[in-house]
Length: 278
Length: 325
Image (cartoon, rainbow over all chains, first blue to last red; front, side):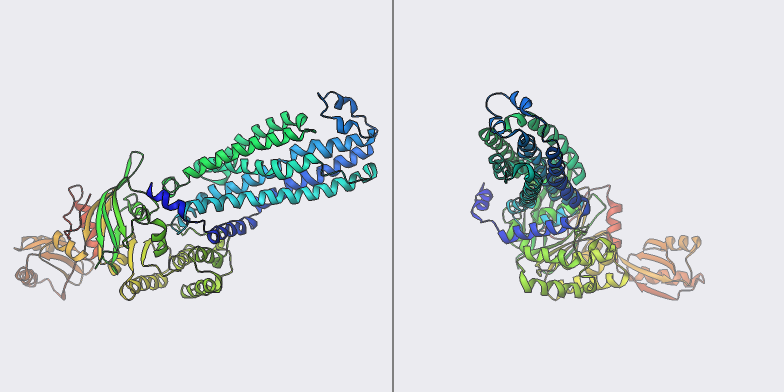
């Protein structure tokens, strides 16, 4: 009790936190096994896929998607149906349907980095050295969270800028205007994507406590995350089409789950528990 | 003088396995303690408990006057640890590994770089400073990890196998360094090692752990006095003693123990008179005695004698302040 009170009074040592984050990211940058998937997947999802779909949609612009859109209940598809027919396919795909898929980027990046940051220390046998340093458990935990969260969100945002450039460029002959980001995209980027990054992190914090290697953590984490995310994407695609409120609500739910997982992980992130599992 | 390290009845289990069972001892500032015992004896658990990484199930400790459980951060600022595994990040360079720890320890900017390079130079690693650790040999890793443990000039050092993987010259340098840290700088050192020779050269005190229990604690000479009375000597007979010579020695009054050595025979006798009788008997039987060198038991002798003795109960500690679990 006394030690908990003392710990609360001590401010976070941000210099130490920065040192841990800097060390971890320097190390990650040099690991091709981590960096390549983190770059290739966003490149495929946010550059190649919209490019291919954009070109296909442009050449198939006579395809009438209004029948498909009219099956969506309520007025959800109304903003797309109001567009000229030749613009509907490209707006539907690049403006809306890709948005949930985009969430795979922050999820994957945060999960991979968190596995390396938490389980990777055990695997490399560097955890004990960390535990013998004058570094508060809370500061070490914050540093490890930031190591995964900040790059995941930044990479998502950078990826989105690339996506917007590619999508608007390829669609220009049809659209004659910049149509991405839509309002839905703004919600995805600034609200849902960070929440999903936090969710990947929260799952990995829990999983890494038991895993002995980052690969094991990734496998365990993937087994938990992927079915959830595909279920969510499948269920949400229709609703996310145009309803910003639904997207906001989904983001809120994801945030709450992620924070609960991280908070629980933090309670178990003690030197004693970490050392006992080494 | 206040003790540098005090442990009172420290106990810690992992599940049903009792890793440490009632460890108690005291160590004065500037002393070197050799923590000895086979794998799984509880040496690493002891270091983790004393540095506040693990919490004891029962018992307490004070290191530099601080409680490792409640003052862990403050304590770890003043201690340095070399873990059995060097614990370096292979993906970083030698300098980056050290700079990271320097920053955590408050050595930042130019001061940190200067201190890191000073230690890299001292451990012969400056020309590998910008190389990734991935390609380093065990010895190079060990030197780097030692440099890291000394970055902040700690008052108490916990060193787990500091010379394993080092070549003979580097081993000698490290032993001299540890010795000078204790004798010249007054640093307290807890040395976990399997190399009894180096422990014998460095340690003022030894603790023998076995399955989490302290079998013996004290100064090696005091423990030797508890184990053996009388005098020991190496007799140079020009060749290893034969069975007949050993038999004859066994018949001399006052001979407690005799064993073959490379040069002849190693004997332990009751007193000076018995030693004279041994030499007289050998000469009388026309066994040439080229030399007789008194032999003080080494830490190695003491350790193996203690190991041999257990099966039974714990050795009586040589200090009133100590007790085995």
